[in-house]
Amino acid sequence: MSTEVGAYDAKSNRLRRSGAGGMKPGPRNAITDVEGLLVGNASDAGLKSGVSVVLCERPFAAGVHVMGGAPGSRETELLAPDRHVQEVDAIFLSGGSAFGLDAGSGIADGLREAGRGFQVGTVRVPIVPGAILFDLLNGGDKAWRVNPYSALGRRALAAASEDFAIGTAGAGTGATTLDLKGGLGTASAVISGGYAVGALAAVNAVGSAVQQGQPNFWAAPFEMDGEFGGLGAASSVDPHAEPRLWPALQEPGANTTIAVVATDAQLSQAQATRIAVAAHDGLARSLVPSHTLFDGDIVFAIATGARRLKESSADVLRIGHASAACLSRAVARGVYSAEKAANDATPTWKVRFGGG
Image (cartoon, rainbow, N blue to C red; front, side, top):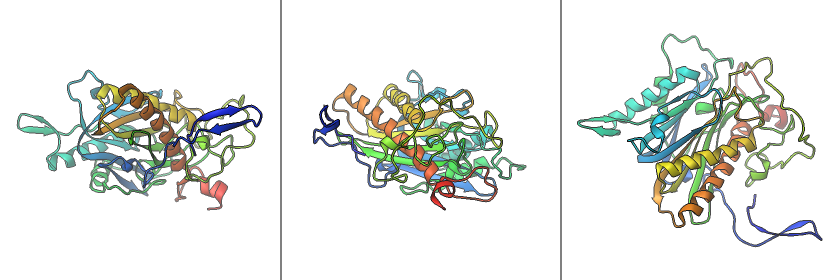
């Protein structure tokens, strides 16, 4: 997709391109194109669930915005701009509903053993905010005696790398949407000023990522380099149609899309919070409906601070726009990349539309 700008030519009914360069994907097309960031995944195929963690070699600024009606989170209040702690050590996304919040404890334990954390006297306390999605009715074995998510959090931390799997991986292992299997998706962009922007999403929505039962993704206008099939928008969509609701296999409240957007710009916690707000537009552009009473949609925004802002307000606006675009693409890539597994409650995109 090109984001070049130009003038509209009424005679030809076309947009005249100005020749200006637009956003381009980073080399990995992943959130780890933001230099210094690592992502670790841990999955349990029998459980049909997992954990993903985003971290850096040093603490980073972070903000958060919640727009879903049924959120589940850990330490999000700490990310308000007026709080004492202004940086965090990691952010996690997890399946497991409320049980999945224990993933943060496993990650915090591992970081503490590595000497990471907020210094309080002689003690270090790792700051690990996170969010969970509901995947307890997806066909996996949930009859555990010991909560498995702390161990999954530790495994995800140990697996942290610049390269990581998407689709049926990490927090997206058991995710579902209205009509297709969900998954873990990522995307990146390099924007004017040289800033890198990326997104990571675990897609488990009440809504659908595809246009009214067709193979085309709602995020099609933002696609780059055929990253989720290159199908473009559907030729026929009814803009007045009411959204379909959950199928028989899905219960109201059994949802949530949780995400992290990131940049290498130097942002304050307040600016990171504004980026998280802007990034929610990416969910609205890629999932229909989104931000419902039954979703717990949460977006975290992190800034590594490697690049100083040149035009403060304008740069924050551009980063916010790019974050929303990347998040739309990450949502579609998560659904597009999902793989078939035993006892799936919903078909994958590849099985339903691609012959996989």
